[in-house]
Image 1: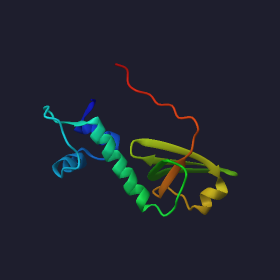
Image 2: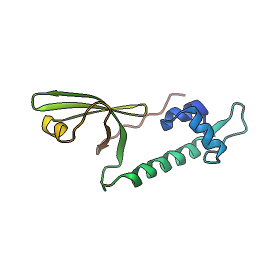
Image 3: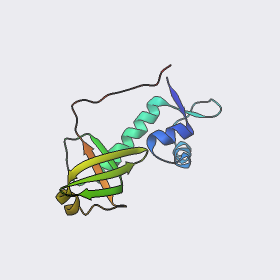
Length: 130
């Protein structure tokens, strides 16, 4: 089974190294006996799912979209009838093109909390070489 160092686990979960260490201390994430300690991939995946469920429970709407990115708006560029909105969700940058009217109605501005929902029929999955 693949294992991950604390810093890589934190990066994958979009949290700090200290947060992962606290979760280990609280028994929310197990570690291997290796030095330095590593987190088993299946346990990391389970914690990621728990975090997703917590975000979904806090959401006040139901949606068929399963790919949701909660983040902070980092850019709003309105040009004529269209707008480009950039959202930073952990290590992920999500870019949305929408009508300028929609961007204005949502009061989107840099620093706003927002959720990007993505519904796609084609999703490419990659794994590292080796």
